Image 1 (cartoon, rainbow, N blue to C red):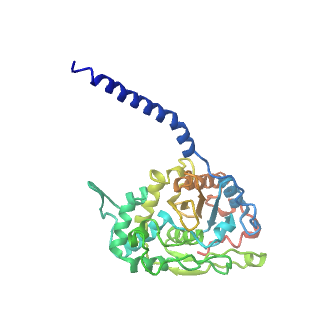
Image 2: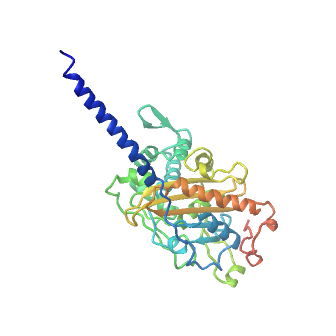
Image 3: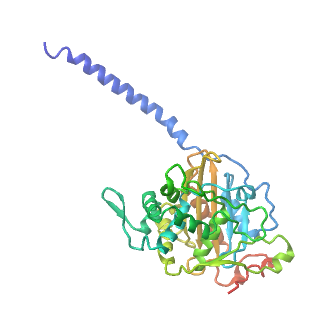
Length: 363
């Protein structure tokens, strides 16, 4: 009979499918468990010197970071004063790969050089074109690789250095490191990958904070200052590093950073009832330090920016990511909002009196 030889084979195939399916079903929970690992539990603030920080900002940042291996840097964008540094050992280290937080630097260069405009549509897939706002919101690598390639290595590096990469952006902060900007295109991916992931660049939280403060206040890049003595705090005077004439570009950059928070990669930081922030995430593996990095650089509020927050996470778990870093920043913004930090009247803001002169707006 014709059908007999086929039946045993069919049974065998069905058995293999069934067994394979069961194997997958039984293996799934273990695989899911591995992916659900939390980051390692540490005390990131245990070795910090706390007397130089704003006590309110610091405590909220410490609580938000919890037991995660990470660092938080907070800066006043109106004058460059460092408000808090949590996990100072990590923050003052030699630098990390910027991951996608390099994209605002590339966007500034592209806009300033006329390579892109607000409504420039770049092809990122076979039938998909997006503009700068959507590229920032979703951290699209292809978009920024194309912008970087059109700019070329020389111009990308020019703007990186102009904005403070590869240099110290602090004033009289001996622990600060300059990071690194390569002198030639990186072997892996060239200027394209350098423009999407920051390949070959080493950046510090202070350099990211400096860039964000400049975007927040309208183009003035202050030297970051970290007063360590009572005399330094009383005699604090803002010091301008340079002023960028980028007012026409700011709406384009800010819209992209706001979109990232509202519906993009940083949406975990969004608080519909609190103070809205604008920011950019970054996630990548850093071969130099090992493991994964999660970045989030941001500022708030939108109308009268009062604080810049940079969150950096490092570890081996999949939870280490830019979106998770933005979640931690969201907790900080929420805590500050609940403590009336964003009050219009500075007298209502919860800061120690010995810092009053340091927080005075120079304008």
